[in-house]
Length: 92
Image (cartoon, rainbow, N blue to C red; front, side, top):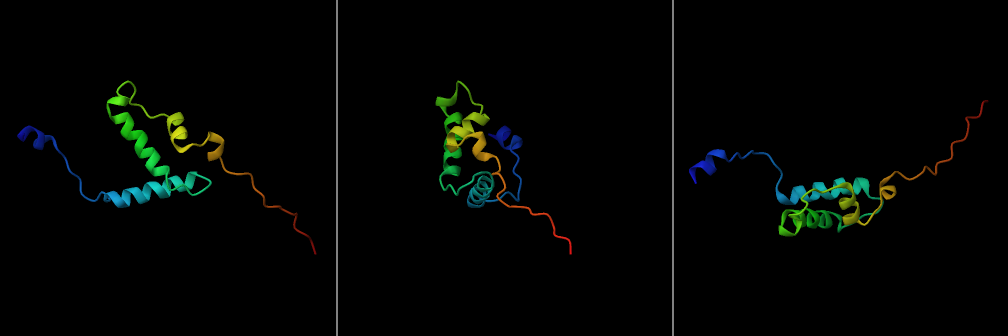
């Protein structure tokens, strides 16, 4: 046990669990076109699955896995085309 505590490093200043969840939701909101209250839960479930015995074969989380968990395609994450009409400035 002393060896464990000698190797353990704890850093102060990290946000608590609720703040981390809020930060994750905000980050996801920046990438998804519609509000998705389940997105953070789906990603957490993906990581949890990979960390358990079920994910022992392949612990990597790849782009495809994230897209599948969020039920979106890469194109869904791209910015939408602009609908703003730009008219040339009129000279007086």
